[in-house]
Image 1 (cartoon, rainbow, N blue to C red):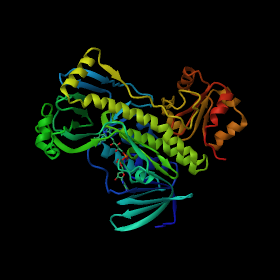
Image 2 (cartoon, helix red, strand yellow):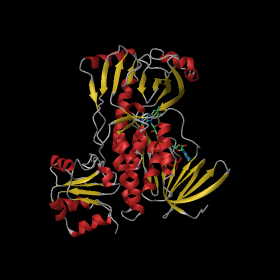
Image 3 (cartoon, rainbow, N blue to C red):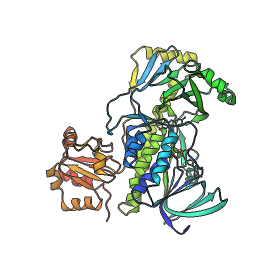
Image 4 (tube, rainbow, N blue to C red):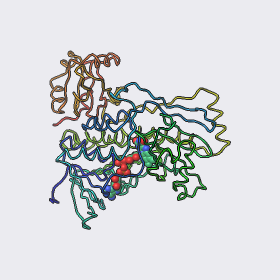
Length: 498
Ligand SMILES: Cc1cc2nc3c(=O)[nH]c(=O)nc-3n(C[C@H](O)[C@H](O)[C@H](O)COP(=O)(O)OP(=O)(O)OC[C@H]3O[C@@H](n4cnc5c(N)ncnc54)[C@H](O)[C@@H]3O)c2cc1C
């Protein structure tokens, strides 16, 4: 082993965030070291839902088909039902294709997904994975970060160097602790028991998710994939946690829906759901991603999704900085862009949690009466909008929003044509009218320039009163231009080699 080698990026933690980031950086041709203290993927029940934008990220690392083979589209939505069985609130579902060129929601089994992401890393010779290696020390100077790592099987200490270290090391993140980034609590902290069962025979269970807002025992039911069904059960103050996990008690609590004759108990665990966001996702050469810098109660199924979005946002910025196309300060836009969306999702999850977790019968009756007074309210997630950062922030929406992914005339999805690079798409006259310096800038950025957009994209430009659009490698919109001059202006946001 060459301990003098300097990796481009070291990643602490091979959960879904670290594994996605490693795939993205590997695809970019960077040298990556991944340190993971465990030998295998985490086996207990965690994420079961991701959204269309997350599938698009998996597509960008060449894993769309592999993931789709293990996931099912979630077309049915989520219903909040009170103890009387009345529906109070609905998150709509749809079978229609969403803006990312796929369904809006998918259900999956987290250990399977993590397995696919790990297998994906084998494609990249520049990515080195060290399992059973625990990060124990960090030192950074002007040039690099030095990692002290405990090789758990060999019982020895090793040292590695990297230009940047990303702590994708989960909720208890040692990297976050080293950085001293404060965690802000957004108000929900509650233990829940989470159990998965495998059906042995068809059972009369809903296809959609149900939040049982019963003050006697709040619960969530989810249809996962195949025969797997999940019940999440709120732990009440008087519960004996160990007794609660005993199979006979689990069966008693879900006995209204399934019995041991219908299903086998696969796994169960008690988690405390948190709602926290860190302040300080970057300190010099150290960065945080995923649960290391935010944790949400899972009522919206968005915790892992947020980590995957972090990876997609961070990967192209690290690449641009490491390849000399952008100054290190580009990395400061990572937190400013991502934190507002993460915060909005956590706040919505907390709001929903407060509806679900009401255990005072009087308050539950008041809540039910309020909902009964109107039609069931339908809610949607906060829009995918970046906070201020590396895009035309003065231009307003759709700058800072994801560009849709239509299917092209030749059957390909747009991103298959664009790849993970900057894209400049516009009408012939506007593109031709940009100055030679701007054309040269696009070239130095490695951009793909399309000056005869297909009708589906021309329609999008029409709908936005635009003649051209510039996209970042993560498919977020830098800005739209109505004139060649505007195109010059927004192109200044594109990182380009000197
Ligand atoms: C019950 C439940 C349901 C959920 N449902 C959903 C859902 O439906 N949808 C969704 O999007 N999210 C959901 N989530 C959240 C999701 O599971 C997490 O957000 C996601 O796993 C976080 O991924 P991560 O890679 O950031 O962190 P982790 O998966 O926690 O990975 C961190 C890794 O870092 C490693 N590590 C830690 N310290 C060190 C060290 N010192 N050295 C080396 N390695 C280290 C750990 O071993 C671990 O492998 C749910 C969570 C729970 C608990």
